[in-house]
Image (cartoon, rainbow, N blue to C red):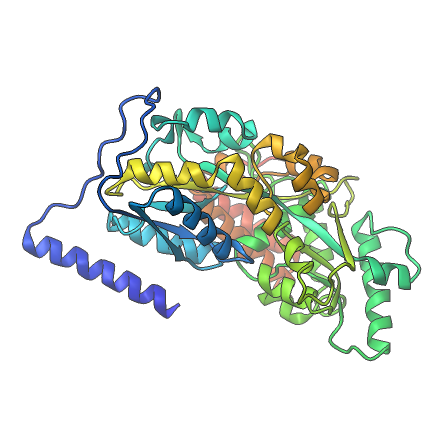
Length: 451
């Protein structure tokens, strides 16, 4: 994090110097007046646009390659890609520092699907720019609705996500299983049997199941999947009722706590996505919960599990169905950019069907453009995009809309409560009772039973 501390220090120093000199804060260049505009942004002058992007898996490399393709078409534009922290909370903290300083250092932000409502005031309306309306119409309507605040398109979808179960096809066959687990109980039993067998064969580093157990947004995603699949609701309902304090939510968390130290390593309580993937890809786990990006990396030439795994929906709980948390990232243009017209053109290029196709094939990043789920090149590279289409289109949303603009606070309270259960600091029933009270204080909402 030293690099981020340096960046933030420079921003604060810059703000202090501007204040001392009596210079006004830079303002954004006016956006085009209407969405009917058809002229490309003026780029006769040399312009530099900076994107704050993620670096999980191949994201950074793919973003840099896409930026180069844009620069090849627009020689007067330089597109820089800024590497930002992997953990969502750390990335959000960095973004908020930029916004507080009204910094023009970053023109385009990669934002989580849960952020449009909370961060809308800092971004331009992309509908003002040529091609945005047409591109938006090609995307999943639910994601466009999620990214629209007060009629303004805050972010253009870049890729979407949903939680999936990765499993070792070779090991299931070795231990006599004809199919992957359909329920969490089946997963536990299969993971334990395979783990015991592999350790007896000499691999003492082998574990049955790896997932995201660190106290961060990733744990909110995992825990929501356990709870919703068990009939425990989605923390806060769409009609703004706090539903988390119920026996089915507590049962789901007690179940997951039982995995720690049995089929999952104690260290899973510090795992994020890449920690789980690294253990899985080294051949040291039978099952893994992760996002689609791990598929192409798992089939890379340096992967110990290349050609030995597949993906399926996450297992079902008491409710009789599995649940996959909706994820995904958007591109949003900063109001503080000195070149918002060029930045918008870059963002729309990066989110175009052509670019989304490249990212799907090379990085198994789920497109948001609907037609790409029928594209033969995409389906050849990532077959499960077709077979698991319903998982992606029916993923469970976190309560970011119902709790905006306080979702980040809600999630933090939630994942800390869940982590306390997983680590054995408290029991699930007590943790959910205390969480309910904390959410009532934060939101002022009434409580209810999940439907």
